[in-house]
Image 1 (tube, rainbow, N blue to C red):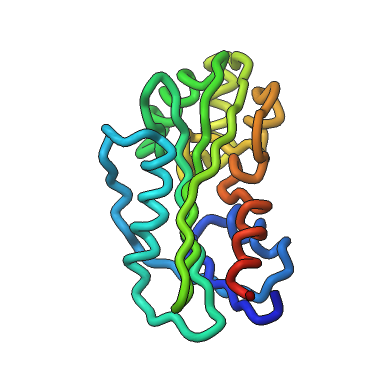
Image 2: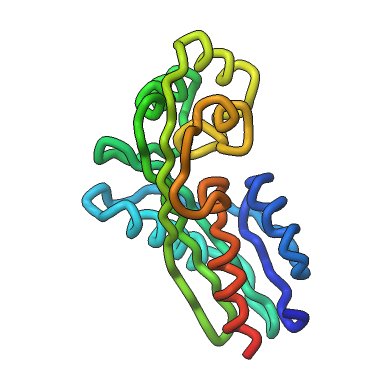
Length: 190
């Protein structure tokens, strides 16, 4: 993949760390895109369309060898999408819904070059045990749930203490299905 320069359009420190681990040359850009969606869509389609929307709003011109990577992660439980919380109370309410239950995590991805575009989503299932109200508030006050879909990070204290089992890609739950992205990027070099 020496012919690719990846452009990661994300402010997420988790996505940035994940991409760095692939050892592909990359740079980071950040721009705002409204994350509104049609609630009638299936969750996989919501995530996929949000990633595509971010790619379509990329404010720069892509050059030869550059591949833009946009992504969006949603948590889905009780036929409802949980995005990023707006405040601590909303974070608490989301975590109360997740604790003691099973939920789905969908990440939509768009890879785009001047010649090619791939848009897909990945699905993982997360089984959580119950945490007390005090434990949930501890997490909210001592960690950073406000920039995370569903108000939690699987790679931090909440994941350590509550997540009992996952089905599917762990990195998808963090925000990027790396194996699927790596395989898709190979098609951009041929």
